Image 1 (cartoon, rainbow, N blue to C red):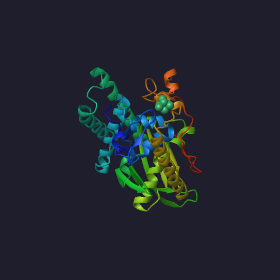
Image 2: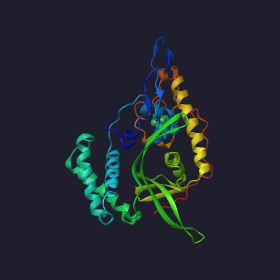
Image 3: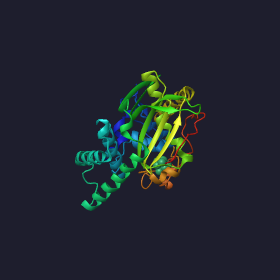
Length: 325
Ligand code: SF4
């Protein structure tokens, strides 16, 4: 597969030997086992959702076909990054459309050369993409503020872990509180070009962003006040105010997740945790043991799993203050 934006953002697992190697089930040979070296927020989210999905992507590194949705996401992110590099008075819809076209011209050569069967298909995709970008301007005015950070590369040691990811944007906003007093808020924003989940599932979608908030706290010594998911499709905006206590809980949750991934690697145990997300999973049709189990698989112990071996600690008071526009 041509790498998705997330895939370009971190390498989750490297392959040096454990000291002395390990013996795998069903063989007598001593082979190399992967060692978890770094973890990205998106891969952490994969494991939390379904350990088998994490294995397919991060251990087996199974290539999948690029999709028009990935291409749109990658191109839109690049165009939006470049929009904020322009002087404020030039951050117009027309500029963004031009930046999208330019970004696509660059990306399609190397990353998506055979994505469309015809020029008409590509044109229809382009028009749909520009409509999506037009809706961005109904959510915010990019000329009204200056981001503090764009595409911020964060590689952070958290206790014994190394977490790496790239944050779309960080900015400071001024807001009038319920007491009528104005206050400055540090906000981190993640763009999404897919469809927004129903509000009742939005809390899950904040998982990766709360990790980013933790990384900001560690690297900058300041705690973001708010995390924000900006779905251009809709558009829909979900926000959640965060506290130091929530980020403390996230740090503990990350430690538990890291340990669980290491245990999964050592035991070669990757439960396939089915959910509504399976319908969007690249591996459902052919590879996932939960959906392709036959008698041989059962004999080998493959099949569905209920939950990852992680003492997942739910972040308290995490109900998003979501607003949908
Ligand atoms: S289809 Fe579902 S259970 Fe299987 S790997 Fe994908 S997310 Fe996991």
